[in-house]
Image (cartoon, rainbow, N blue to C red; front, top):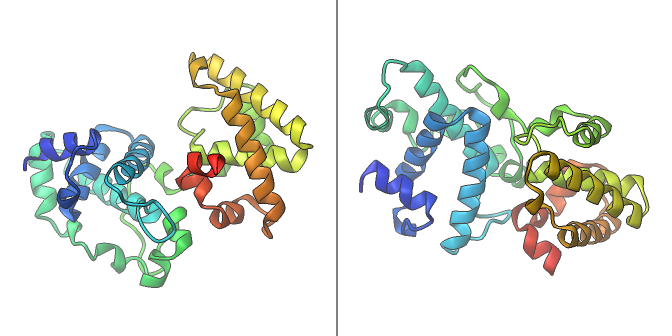
Length: 256
């Protein structure tokens, strides 16, 4: 199977599950790093891997499917290889060299992470820094965190309200964080009203008004509110870890 066949099969979710090997992961990851900025490559990989898993019958859960730390790790490794070989501008040549290099050993992540840390539930759902050896340096460090984490709760909502929040920052997790913050700050109907206002204005500003779904937004506030009332957690990250279905199978969570 050619590199292009692997990439197109993955993107179109037609690649047979038996062909979704370690090497296929590497080809797809390298192509995304080659074609996009670090953050865009990560966001696309996150979205597409989850969708591909669902299509091929692999559950995205706390014990299977998409793994945040491993995905970011391999995008970093891919970016490092690209930056170390600037003279290779042809993707097929780059991919051939990459696959024959030391950077594609399937055990490479365990040179940087203890097994316990890498395969923890938190590591699957959130980016964790290595606990053994530092990762190779790359030019742009934006991949190492969800960009919304650099904002305080109030600044995130203010930036969204002012419509100056970059769309790449407003990921699904950032949506959930905004909802979580509003639910903690207001009674339920006020939280719904504020979330509706924020999303409606933001999507209008982006020229994507068709993306706003008021019914979905209000149902999500109701479901998250019930989960928060039943939770013993006191911060957003631990709440999401406890209620991972919100991040990994959102529609099932709010339609349950």
